[in-house]
Image 1 (cartoon, rainbow, N blue to C red):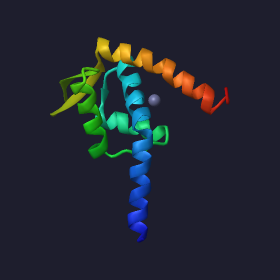
Image 2: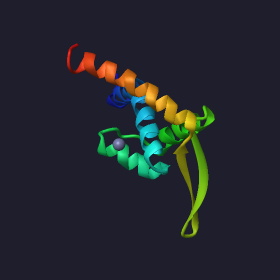
Image 3: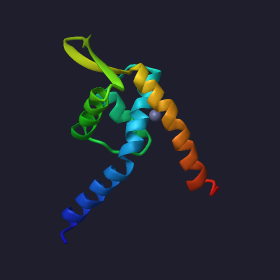
Image 4: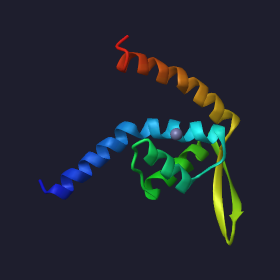
Length: 112
Ligand SMILES: [Zn+2]
């Protein structure tokens, strides 16, 4: 197997493994404040998730399609920036997810 191919496989596996965590992380920030793609990419990088715009935008669109986020275009100088906020359904989904994450955390990290 070539190096390039195995590197790509590792990336694909990681994205699959962490995709739910990335979605919850996005939802968490969208509940707190308006978010936009590049800002969210930087925030995720701060937490050790390297994600490209080509991977993040489908996640944002998917969350919007499910009704968890709502987008709006805001003028930023000469360009338009698409910002996202959590909807009421998104807030409820996050509250429910918090108990699931807490449950998993207790088992994974605290061994309970
Ligand atoms: Zn964060």
